[in-house]
Amino acid sequence: MSKNGLILLTPTSISYAGGSASISANGSVSFSAAYIGLNGVFTADYENYMIVCRYNKSGSDRTNYIRLRQGGTETTTGYTWQRLIADATTLSAARTADNAGIVSQSWTGDKNGFVGHMYGPYLAQATAFRSITVHGQSNAGIQDGVWTHSLTNSYDGFTFYTALYEGQTGRIAVYGMRK
Image (cartoon, rainbow, N blue to C red):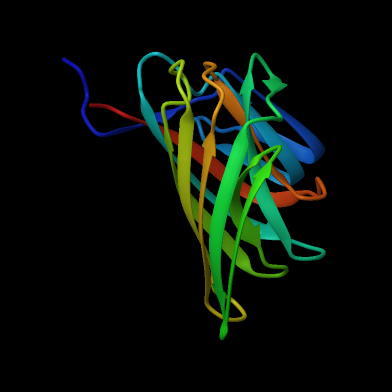
């Protein structure tokens, strides 16, 4: 009998640069002062996925990105993203074609987190992603970000990193959505 709902997935392997990272017994990935890559989380078993992450950032505020990967190799073309940020009393927006998809914002010294939904990364079709980021220690803020990836390749993983490849500390988990 198949299970319905969200299924926590365990990466087949991870890569990281900077500090350290490890796969926990339940399948989530903890990282410390690192940026990370997860391999083998997208499979033929699921079409859509949910990614949940909490993280802290030291140093300057930075935008976070995702690059799709296949067999550990990142794809650096075909992304278009758009975002809306509300921070304190400031609103800003941006849209661009880029070498990665936007996922979240890191506010220095704050507890940050995002929930993202990825649609069809393993399927040989364009991939779409939407995330909501929150931070709330110094003042409540939110980023709503979306991106599409125009290439019709099949991907099995992704890299989560900051704009300048600076390390962050937190935990990330990937869930497959059963139909």
